[in-house]
Length: 493
Ligand code: BES
Ligand code: ZN
Ligand code: MN
Picture 1 (cartoon, rainbow, N blue to C red):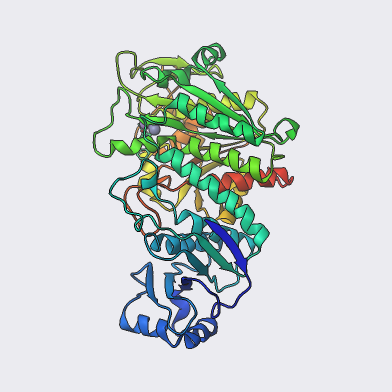
Picture 2 (picture 1 turned 90 degrees about the horizontal axis):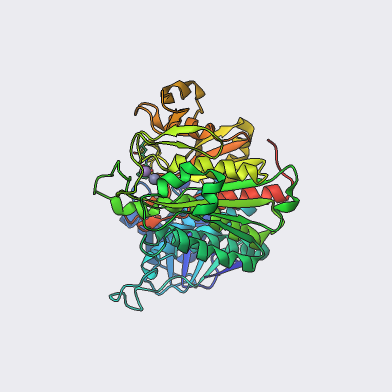
C-alpha cells in the first residue's frame, strides 16, 4: 500500500473514502467537524441522529459522501482521546480494515487534532496494518477477487512525505512480523526460521545460527532441554546490525522467545486452543523483524536480535518434570513444569547475548497465560531493572502507539523458587506466578534489562474491528524505536 502526504482540506480531497474520527467530546460538533459537515450537506449529523453511528457502540460507520468530492465518508470512533500515537494507530487501522473487500482503492484520513510526527507515523503504520489479510498466507480458494480488495493508497492530510516513507518501512516490518507469527508450525520450524532470516544478510546484517553441537559446547542446556523432545532440532539465531560492532559501551540486544510450537511437553497442555501455540514464536518474530526494519531505517543502530528457536514437544526423548539442567551461566535448574519453557530458553539466550557484549537487554515473550488473563489484548506487561531503563522502553512504546504497563520485579519471591536439587525451579506455586516468571529470568541477567510479557497482546483469538484473528505484530515498533534512539545516542540508563 502507498502512503501519501497531502496538505489538502478534508472538504476538497479526492478519494473514494474520507475517514473522519469522531470523539465522545464531539457533542455538539466542534468547529472543524461542523464545517466539514456543512460542506458535505449535513450527512454526518443525519447519520448520527438516525443511529447509523453510536459513539458508545460502533467502531465505524460507512455513509454517503454527500456533497463532498469523495464517494463515501467513513466515520471512525476516536475511541479514547489523549493517547496520541496509540489512538492514531488504532483508529487508522480500524478504518482501512473496515474497507477490506470494498471498492475503496484510495482513502483519505483526516486526523483533525493536528497530530505531531509520531502521531502521523503511528497512523500510517496502523493504516497499513488494517489492510493485512491472514488468509493470503496460504490462500483460500473460496476468496473472490472482490473479497481480496484492500485500500491501495492512503492520503494522510497534513503529514510529511519523508516521515511517511519511513513509516512505510516500519509497516512492512510489522507485516513480516505478523506473517512469521501466523505461519503454521509444520511450515515454520526452527531451521526454517534460520533460513528465512538469512535473507537479512542482503540488508547488511550478520546472521549467525548456532546448532545443537555448538550450543552443547557452550553449555546452553536450559535451551537444549526444552528442544530435546522434538523432531525439529533447536537453533539459536543472532542477527547483528552493521552498527553493532561499533556500539562500544552501548549495545542493545533484543531477545525474543521463539517457541515454534508449545504443546507444553510432558506437562501437556489441554487440547482446547492448543492451535494458538503456533504463535508462541511471536517474541522471536518481533525481534527479528525489528532487526530487519532497523537495518533499513538506520543500519548504524548498535543492535543485535537473538532468537532462541525450539519446539516444545512430548515424546520418549522429551525432558521430564524433575529433570535438572545446568544453564550456560552455570546455575542449575530443576524442571518442575515442562510447560514453563519460555523462561528456560530465554535464560540461555540472554546470557549468551551478554557474552556477545550486550550492555542493555530487552526480551519479548509470550511467557505466561496469567499475563493474558490480567492484561487482555491491549496492554503488555513489563518488568525492568533498573527502572529508568524501563522508562526508556516505555517511552519508545508510547511514541509508536504501543501500550505497556510496568509490573514489580519483586525479588523477595526468589526464595519461593528454591529447591534442594538445584539453584532454582523453573515454575513455582500459582500465586504471583507472573512476577515469579520475571524473577526467574532475572537470575540469568546482569545488565540493564526489560522483560516484556506479550502473552495477551501478541495475537487475537477471534476477528475484531481492530485486528483479524491471529498475530498483530506486537512490540516490533517499540523495539525499532528503541534501536533508533540508541543510534541517535539517546540513552539514559
Ligand atoms: N506459551 C505459554 C504461555 C501462554 C499461554 C501464552 C496461553 C498465551 C496463551 C507458556 O509457555 C506457558 O505455558 N506458560 C505457563 C507457565 C506455567 C507452567 C508456570 C502458563 O502460563 O500456564
Ligand atoms: Zn510457551
Ligand atoms: Mn509453555
